[in-house]
Image (cartoon, rainbow, N blue to C red; front, side, top):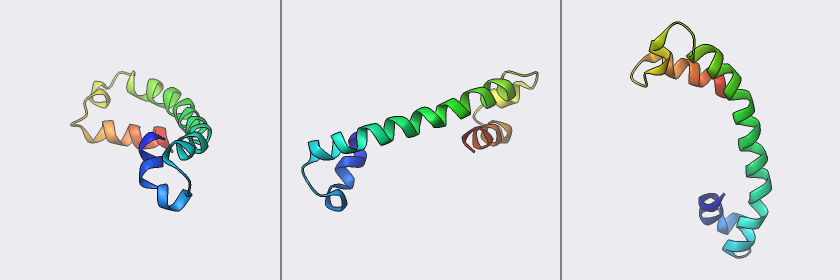
Amino acid sequence: FIFQSLFMKSMMGGTYWENVRKSFMPELISMNFMMAGMAPVMSFLMMGSDMRAMEPTELLFWGVMSFGVI
């Protein structure tokens, strides 16, 4: 929300600090819901028997990450 408010200042109008205050709750809710969905998927799929899912250089890692975000 700190950087979003800076770069969207012309669209949101108002001062920087007003925009930080306006974007705080939506951003907090959005990130918490995303993490609430991502955590169980990733812990189930990444902590399994295939340790390639833990290595960022593997395609499986990015597939699990993408699935978790969805």
